[in-house]
Each structure stands twice: as C-alpha cells, then as structure tokens.
Image (tube, rainbow, N blue to C red; front, side, top):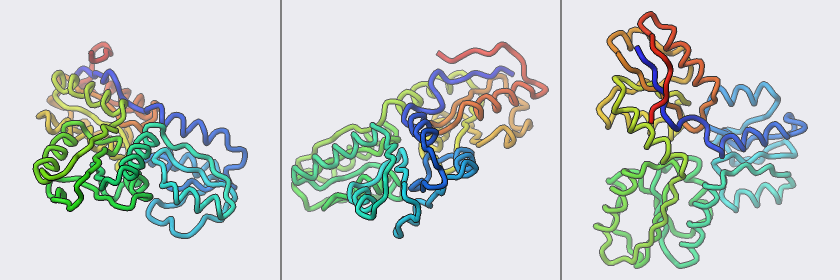
Length: 289
C-alpha cells in the first residue's frame, strides 16, 4: 500500500499566525480566548493546559472576567470588538487577514446600500462575525436558502472556506431568482482553501481512498471530505492516528492523505506513520503533483 500526501495540506498561515500570537501572551490565565482559536480539539486542549480560558462560541453574551481577550482567527463583528474594549478589556486580535478582507467587502456593500448576501454556513462563527455589523443581510448555504429579495441592489460575498464550485452554483441561483437586481460579487474564498481543494482533486485521481485529518467541527476539513466523496472516492475523516482502522485499507493499493487548515503537522505525521505501519503498507513516500 502506497501513501501519497497532497501537494498542499494542513495549517494555513492564518492559523499559524494565531497560534504564534498565543505564545507571546505573558499570562495565559489572564486571557480568555473568545471562542475556539481554531476548530481543532487538540489545539483547544493544548491551550487549556497552558492556562488560557476559553469561551464557547455560542455563549458570548456575557463579558469575560479576564482583563485580556484574544479574538480568534475567525474574527468578530466590529460592534463586538467595541463592546469588549468599552468594558475595559485589552484585545489580542488574531483575525486572519483574509477574513478581515471579507469584512471589508461586506462593509463596502453596506455603504453602497446593498442587501448583503453571504454564501456560507449560517451558524458558523466567521459568518456570524461577517453579518454582525450589517443593517440588511441574508446567509445562503443551500439552494433552498435563495430568495427573491426586494432590494434592487445585492452584494454577494463568500465565507472564506467556501468551495468555489458550491459558491458558483449559489451565485447562479441568486442571479436567476433576482433578475431585477444589480448584483455585485466579491470572491472572498481564501487562497489556502483553493490550493488545498486543487491539490486534493489531483490526489483523488491517484488514490483508492483518501484520509482527511482534522477537527470534527472544522468546516474546511469537512469540505475536503465532501470533495473526496464528490470525486467518487471514499473519505475517511479522522482527528488522530488512533481513529484509523486497518480494515478500512485492506484492499487499498494507494491511500491519499490530506488535512484541513487547522490541523497540526504532528497530527498529520502521526497518521502517515500509522498508515505506513499497517501490515500491507509499503512503498517509498512521495508527494502528489
């Protein structure tokens, strides 16, 4: 059995920068992480062990008790940031620059008097931040969410981890349902997401099955697994090497390996070692591409 890594996989620069910022915090016990820094349980456990307090993403109505608050890579609405500042909290802002770019697009559409439509998951923390400052907005995650909006001007943007093919389908449906509207579109899908999807498509063509490493709550990791399924291959989504079952690979000649943008290198390496240690595993490691 041969194990092939995707050409692009694992942690993106935004996640790496956010983790680096936590290492510069002098007193973690005086800092509340405002949600999950990234959607990766292993990272969450590591931060907790270092002393950081962590507030659940769905429970941010009450203010934190710590003097310092760390804004996660997913970002927050400006009004939420201002609420924390006015309450006297110091902020460590690790918002990914590509998420900030999406916020800029949403603000610009609002200034132009457009009804803002975000293509993405309604309950995702990034999307909640994107719409948090807008006077008029909708979130479209599925074709069933598309409406004929009364606004004569629409501004459409994407959650940064949206897949290009899905975004295009939704954009086409919005245009079809709103022929009366002037529709402006800003493609705010991040480049690391694009790179990982493109590399995965190359990998699918070579592999019998693809192992996707990443958090269960990570949207981009789940999207990678969906891409595998759409490509006609079986996806095995694991958070760690301990979840691998040798029976899943008994008939495989080639196993592909990829990982979400919040997955640590050591987790990916451990999965690869476990795959290669299986009784049928053999071959020289190589990369797709």
